Amino acid sequence: MKIPSAQAGYMELRGAEKDADCEKVEVAGGVSKARACCNHFSPQAKDTGKFSCGTCEYVRSRTFGGRLRKG
Image (cartoon, rainbow, N blue to C red):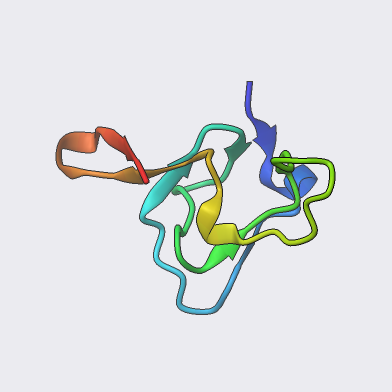
């Protein structure tokens, strides 16, 4: 079950293109892979000190035919 975008703290920069979907967060119309991020993520290690939205493992790019691909 996905969590609401407001609960996840989802944000988009101006001019964001909704070109992906997220496995964890429900965002109307999809998410922007390059110009958005949220506060809901799992650090890779306990000493993780930086989060880069472009490396989110829950975002799946949209492809032709409505299918999703990783990355």
